[in-house]
Each structure stands twice: as structure tokens, then as C-alpha cells.
Image (cartoon, rainbow, N blue to C red; front, side, top):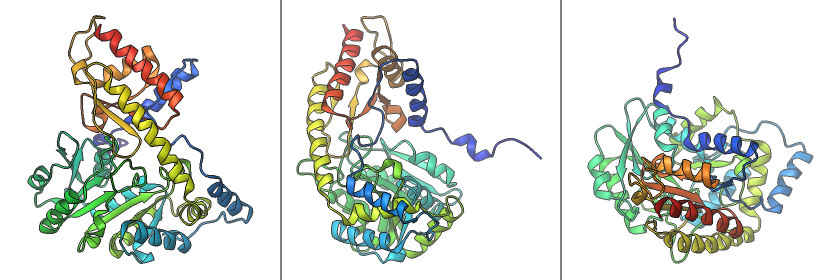
Length: 398
């Protein structure tokens, strides 16, 4: 007998974003004026029509359990959306509604990954992917992307072994803002078919895309639907982070297995949020274009300002609402102030404690020497925040 924690917990870390939230909250409680650029959620309110649909559901007492895979009207709306936007046809029993896209991904991993299976993850990557793979019993295999953050397809193929079960891709991407080209995704599809592996495609940022860039779903490639696990949700596109709504689209056995996991954890997705999500997909879409237009203005501003800071490099941001900038020339180099930052984490701590702006270290995304900020804040707030970042870096350098 033993009262020790399970062995799996020894290999799983607390999400770095969660740990930073706690530190930022503590400083704010102390009265420190912190500008938070670490949070990955839109600053816009949930659109009124969506809120009203949620209120209507409450007033009509639609507040009980639903079916474990989500209500039929929502799955039908998802099927239409994916057909219209992504050119993939799913039956409603190939779709499951989940309590957030993160749970959809977690349930899908539990469904397809077993003990000892390997999952390839191009890095930089979303902080939770590797630990979610570990929780499913699998082993994350991290593969570096190209310098411009595009997929390194040769490296991905070279990393595939007999134990490989899947590769995870996210486009548009958190943290880099990269959008994978149709050409690269077609090449990845050819690799997946040749090696007989799944592709888990996280498309949560698909609507937040800038300029001439276009979102392309790998599931739309002939022959790929049955080996693609498509993950999406409502948090980013409709500013519904707190409503906790996501979905998985995949072949029937994968979806059925994912539903089993949900049934033994959260039982069902929240009823009220499901009704709001039906309205999100079927109602007016003006709010989406408005948010994306505003994000693009902020993107332009942030790119310009960051690249004006000495020894900071920020590559083009093609989608999502993050800037991922290179600060490697500030690491392990003595500054005029006598400091030596041994890591990006130390640099971010310096910016937080002395210049009161919260950022995320690139090492949290398996890319040491970088910093991620979210530009899901007003231009006024972003100006103040980047002023502080610039002051902090210049004070260290000169």
C-alpha cells in the first residue's frame, strides 16, 4: 500500500501559463499596476446575440444534462460549418461537442494514444501539447520547425518510428502566428498516409488570419479525413473562452472513444453554452470580421514597434493574436546594468517585476531565447506595454 501520487504525475508539469497567472494576480493584489500580455484570450466581449441565446436557454430552463456527444442542433451546425469553411463532410455521429477545444484534444489523445505510443510535435508548440500526450500514456517527440516557423517535413518524417501514432499541428499557430501553407500540409498528408499515422489538426485560430494568408484544413485532402482528428472551438473566434466549448471531428470509432472519456470525466458539455454556440455558428458573423480587422491593426503596430527595439527580431505574424520575438542577443550577455539573463524566463521575470508587464518566456513553448506576448488588448494598452518592454531592454543594454 502507498499514499504516494501516481507515477504519471511525476512526468507532468503544471501549465506555465497557469503558474504565471498566479504570480501576476499576487502582484496585482499588492497594488502593482501590471499590464498582462500573457493571456491568450480575446479582449472583446462575447457578441450580444450569443449572450442572449445563453440567457434564453437559462430562462427556458435548458439547464440539465444533454447527450454526452452534445445536442444534435449544435452537431448539425458544426457539420455545416466544417463543410462550408473547410470542405470536409462529416455526419453528426462523427462530431462530438466537448468542454473546450483543450478537452476535445485531450479526449482525442486518450482515444488514439496508448502506453508507449509516440506523438510528434513540431516546436515551438502550445505549452500543453507535450503534457497532454504524457497524460494519455504516450511519449511526446519534439521536432524543430524551420527558422521561419514553417514545418520541417524532413525532420518530421525522420522522427517517425514504429511507435509513432500521430503528429500534432496547429495552424494558425500558437505561439508563433505562423500559418502553414497548403503545399506543406499536402506533403505532411502524404507522409501520414505512407507511414499510416494520424494527424491531429488544431484549428482553433482558423478565423483569425491576416493579409493574403489562407487557412487550409488537412482533413479536406482526399484520403485524409479518416486519419485526421480535427479540433476546433468557440473560444477565440467568438470570444467565448469562459463558455468552455469545443469539438472534435473524426471517424466514428475515434469520436465514440473520445465520448467515452468525456462521459467518465465531465459527463456532458454544458447545456447553456451549447445553445449559445448554436447561435454563434448560425447567427450573424459580423462580430468575427470586426474582431479580426482590429487584431490586424494591432498586429501591424506590434510588429513595427518590436522590430524597432535594438536586437529584437519579430518575424511576420500571419494569424492568431501573438507576437513571438527573438531575444537571444539578450541572453547570457552582460548588460550595462550589470545583469546577465541566464534564460528567457529570467528576462521575463525582470520585465514583470521591474517594468510591470507580464510576458511568456519562449522556453515554455520549447523555444528558448524567445518571448511571447498576446496583442489581444487595445492599442492604448499595447502602446504602454511595449513602451515598458522597450525601456526595460534599453535600460539593460545601454
